[in-house]
Image (cartoon, helix red, strand yellow):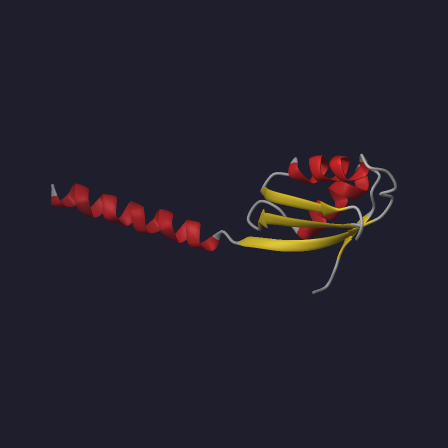
Length: 95
């Protein structure tokens, strides 16, 4: 019984270590070619479709997209590439 509990404890510690290693990151992208009211919707839908994305906020007025993502599954470059591939060239804004 103690062996099973010990094994279970080790498994829990390993799983929690992996959860801590996964990081939530935020990136703000400058997005070009947003000229109409449907453009922010398309940008948001495109970015939300990238694996690891947790939240997307798009500002038509500022021509930006703020994305919260899991850095174990995605990168800022991958997000910019996805937006660019949909016809909205994007670049990360240094903060």
